[in-house]
Each structure stands twice: as structure tokens, then as C-alpha cells.
Image 1 (tube, chains in turn green, purple):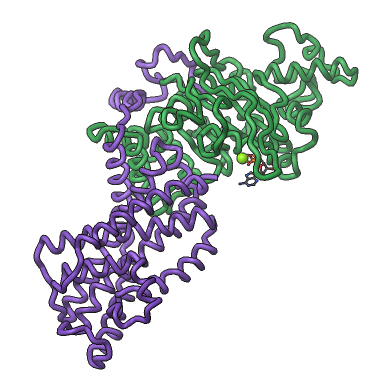
Image 2 (cartoon, each protein chain N blue to C red; image 1 turned 60 degrees about the vertical axis):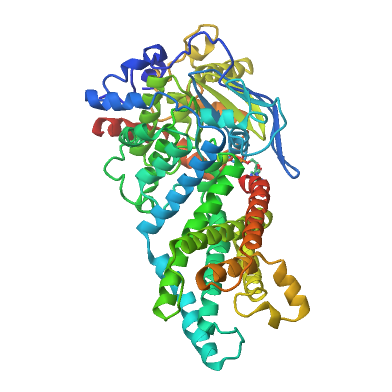
Amino acid sequence: MTATGQAQRHRPPGTTGPGALRCTGLRYSFGSTRAVDGVDLDVRPGEVFGLLGPNGAGKTTAIRVITTLLPVPAGMVEVFGHDCARERMAVRRLLGYVPQQLSADSGLTGRENVALFARVFDIPRRERADRVDAVLAAVGLTESADRLAGTYSGGMVRRLELAQALVSAPRLLILDEPTIGLDPIARTSVWEHITRVRVATGMTVLVTTHYMDEAEQYCDRVALMHRGRIRAVGTPEELRTGLGRAALAAGQTAADPSAAEPSATGPTVTEPTGPAGPTGPTATAPTLEDVFRHYAGSGLDGRESTEDGGDFSDVRRTRRTASRVG
Amino acid sequence: MSAVPAAPRPASADRGPAGTVPADSASDRASLLLVPPQPRRGWRMVVNRMLAMCLVELQKLRHDRTELYTRAVQPALWLLIFGETFTRLRAIPTGDVPYLDYLAPGIIAQSAMFIAIFYGIMIIWERDSGVLTKLLVTPTPRSALVTGKAFAAGVKALIQAVVVLLIAAALGVSLSWNPLDLAGVAVVVVLGSAFFSCLSVSIAGIVLTRDRLMGIGQAITMPLFFASNALYPVALMPGWLQAVSKGNPLSYEVDALRGLLLGTPAHLGLDLAVLVFAALAGIGAASALMGRLAR
Ligand SMILES: Nc1ncnc2c1ncn2[C@@H]1O[C@H](COP(=O)(O)OP(=O)(O)OP(=O)(O)O)[C@@H](O)[C@H]1O
Ligand SMILES: [Mg+2]
């Protein structure tokens, strides 16, 4: 079922010029807590890069450094060649940012919320109204645009925030858990909007998520972060086959022969061909969630594992229904 | 319709996402969103951010006017009860100016100050709700953001000043309605509010939590009010309080407002100079401390 996800994956063209985002030995501490502890990252222009990791891994902190909210020494973080310490304004002009926390000004209407961002990103007056309309339409908020944002549901606020982030045509969109707390339909629609804009603009996306199926389906590459460090980077398939190979080498493997062909470039189709059926993903080739568990220890707490692990296939089923409905 | 669009090709950006956007007009409009805007720089940017913040304040007031009404209650009570009583008592020597008239500019300055001090609490609320964080990631230097917020507080205070002026006029205070004087009043109120809002944002940047700021805000507003010439002439105060009053920008604000509205002798030049200096210093301090609110 994820075969479609594999097929639509975007390969960025041969990268020339500076990377979209480059972190070199990025560190940040809150007092004695080393939230980010030596992260090297290289996000290529045009790709969707997923930052995965358990609670407290340091994802949000890394993002807050990249968005110039937390100060770091020069040379640690560059966005399209602009240093986050020395050229903050240049960096901020390139960014669209949706923080982890739901945040829209509840005393303003949706349209006013977006217009404020259009204004502070220097969109000229003659274009402003049209742009705001266009972006509100793109996230499907045209009808509620003139209601106070305080009356919006969580999913609507998320889409409003996406509109705020997209109105300035950012080159790097940073989304910190954009789909947390959203129902499956809203999740799919948020991702659809992101994909649509990305297709049209070639924008780069850095996203964190706790949903492995999202990472699998929408991210070109993912990094697994744990305790402030990056433990693994690659395409979701690479990580899965990598783990499959490791498991095989350790001799405690699943008896799936497809996992034993690591050198082939496009190996594992996640759809298990064996009799296991859709119920037991761990019985066959490793899933991204297995990779996650492998690197984060069993660091998934109960909440996550029931949410993501147990109802994994349910979520997918709902999504398929959702896309049929919407 | 498929949930996943076809393989993206950034090269064909002008074509728009076929299949997802039905009408031509829609894809026309969507193509607007592909071009990053031309940045403004220097003072034009600062002016733009100031206008943006002020506009937000006005929009909020338009959606919810209750604050406007509730905030009119306190100054009305001061004028009605305190003002009328002390006018009768003649306890406070204010020369040939009736006490109520003498008090009115003081109450304008006071209510503007209360609003401005409250503004720092709003900044903390905006921080806690994530609104401020997002603004800090826009191409707006901290100083421009603080200046914008300071003048937005000024706009709010100005509306409040109009309300108090109307109440005072209704109570029979004889005020100057000369447009030049009123323009002067506007400038003075905005400068004063800019200072007090920056003071409160600076404290917010130090204490970082709403509860602490509420406490400190309450602890400083009353002393600022009483250690000024808002209620009584400085000459009546003991020496040490006179000294405090001399260092209190509120005194200069009130002095200027009395000069402009009642025509009493005032030191307009000095008052304005002090207020401009205080506002600039406040903006400087608040900008420096704003970064702490980002963390
Ligand atoms: N403002 C702060 N002050 C002190 N410590 C902090 C602060 N923010 C984060 N931390 C600490 O830094 C570490 C990383 O936190 P961070 O929010 O970056 O994690 P995360 O990967 O985003 O987690 P989650 O998935 O729960 O959002 C945690 O140990 C956290 O306790
Ligand atoms: Mg986080």
C-alpha cells in the first residue's frame, strides 16, 4: 500500500550551490541540559526532510536554533548559505515557520492573521489582498477567513498557520509537528497542501513528526535524532534496508528473503507478500518504526506506541477513506 | 482523486499543480504565491512594522470593544469621586484652577500609563501563546518589533485618552479644543505610553513569567502614580518625594498635558525632551531584553 508513496518520491536535481540547510556540529544547552549535542545535517534544496525522534530528543531546540530564535556561534548553521548568527534577517526572509505549539492571534480574524504576516514580510500593498486570498484558498479557509481565529478548531488553526508561513513564498518551510492533534482527514489535507506548494515552487521542507507513516510517505530523507544527536540519516528505504541487513548479520532475522537483498537499489516493498497479512508489520521486513525503536531504544513511551504502533494500519485505512471522501 | 500528486518537477513551476487546482483563476492566484517579496530596508521597514503593529491593535479593538468600556470605568470614577470631592473640599491648593480641571490631565496620563504597563503582560501572553515567537522569526529586527509594539500601546492609550477627555468635558472641565494643543496631547500621550510599555516589556524580559510581571506591574504603577504631580502639585510633597517625582517621566507627561489642555504654565520643551529621551531609552532596553523572551 505504500508503493504509491515510493513512486511519488521526489529526487532533487543535482545540487549546485549551497545546501538549503547545513548544520555543522550544532550544539545548544539549556543550563546543564544538552538539548542538541553536535548535530551535522545537510538538507538539499527541494527535498522534504524529516527529523524524527522521541520526546525530548532535541528536535524543537534544533529548529529554534535554525529559526534564529536561540543564539548560536557563527559557522554552526547556514540557510541557503546565510549564516544564522551573522545574517539573521537574510535567513528569516527565507523561512516559513510553523511552531509545535498552536499559535494564532485569537483576537484577529483568520484573514487579519495572515495579512499581518504578509505585511511584515514586505509584501507590497497592491499584491497583499490577492496573496492573502490565494493562500487562504490554498489551505481551504476561504469561508472561515473572516471569523475570529479564537473560534477555529485546532485543525483550522494549523492550516491558518500554514497560510501564514506560506504567504511570503518561503524557500525553506520549517514545520514542527504540523499534524499533531489533527484528525486523519486534516492530517492528509495538511500534507496535501504542503506537497502542492512544494510541487509548484520547489520549496524545501524541514519537518518533525512522531508519525512514522507520515515520514515514510512524505519525506524524501529522514534523520533519526536521539538525546541531541543524529543517529541515522537516509531515505526511509535506506534506513529500513540498513536495519534489515543489520538484523540479518546478527542472525536473529525475520525469515523474509526480500530483506536479504540489501545491495539491490530498490528492494523492499513494504507490502508483505507472505501469509502474515497487514496485521503484523514486525513479522516481515523492518518498518520505519522498527528503525525508530532500534535507534531510540524502546524510547517510545506508552502513549506513542499505542497511538502509532497499535493502530498503524487503522490510520492508513482511514487515510485512504479520507482521500476518497475529500 | 489521488491523495498524492504526480512527481514534482520544480523546473515547471509556472505550470501550477495540474489536477489539484480546478479553475484557471485559482492557479493564476496561486502563482502569486511563488514569488518572494522585495524586502524593505532601513527606516521604511521600521515604519512598516510600526504601522502593522498599530493596525493589529485597532483591529483587535474593533472586534472586541469591551476593553474600551471597562477601561473607561476607573478614570471616570477618579474624576467623579476623587475629583468632585476634592474640588468641594478645596484641600489641595491649585491656584485659580478648579481641582477637577487640575486632575483631568493627571488622570489621562494615569490611564494611559496603566494601559501601557499592561502591555508588557500582553507581550508575555503573546509569548506563551506562541504568537510572539512567530513574529520573531519574521524579518523584523527586535528593535523594530519593540518600536512597533510601543507605538501600538500608544494608539491604545490615545483612544483611552479621548474617552477620558470626553468624560472630563462632560463633567464641565474647561479644556482647550485647539487642534494644535490636541495634536500636542496626542504626541505626549504616545511618547509616555511608549516609555511605560517599554518599561513593562523590559521587566517582562527579565522576569519572564506573567505572574511575576503582574505582581511587579502592580507594585510599580501606584508608586509611579503617587510620586508624580498627577494628583497634587509637587510643591506639596516632602523633599524626598519631590526628588522621586523629578525622575518620574509621568510628571513630565502630566506637566505637558496640563500646559496643553489647561494653558497653565508648563515647561513644554523640557517635558518633550524628557519624554523623547525616556521613550528611546525604553525602546533600547526593551529591544535588548526582547531576545530573552524568544528563549
Ligand atoms: N526552555 C527550556 N528550558 C530548559 N530545558 C529545555 C527547554 N526547552 C527544551 N528543554 C530541554 O531540551 C531537551 C530537548 O527538548 P526539545 O523540545 O528540543 O525536544 P523535542 O525533540 O522537540 O521533543 P518533543 O517530541 O517532545 O517535542 C529536553 O530535555 C528538554 O527538557
Ligand atoms: Mg518538539
